[in-house]
Image (cartoon, rainbow, N blue to C red; front, side):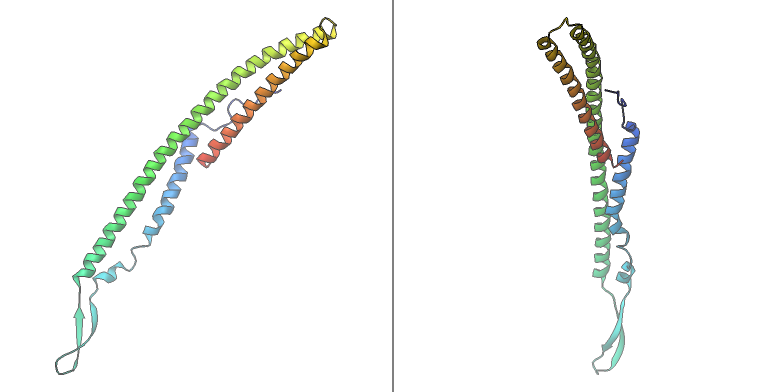
Length: 181
């Protein structure tokens, strides 16, 4: 079995940068609705022009203005700002949580990689013992009933190594997917 790359993940800094970039894009998308919310707001400050009638029922031009419109416009503007700040704060917290999760995934990856390295060293010893058993078997110094358990143990060691590599590759895929790398 050939050695695989010890670390196929990009550096942690690149993964964190990719995660931050993705979160910033999500924040920009969430705030996009507030970018177009201000056109036409100036209309709240324009007085209404119309025609009114006096007591002799003659038409006269009228201008009216309501302070309620100004207060409503101000309240809407403040509400939009507050909602925007809320979305930004929520996004900041989500980003911190995502970075913590990424750190946990990377720590788990590091532990699994160390475990794999140890398993490879043990597998090399198992392979040497197996090769000695093969030589003894071929020289008829070892009976088949004593050789086959050694072969089985060697193959199980090889299988354990392959399974650990699969677990690490799956975790690496999970990390890359989590970071949107």
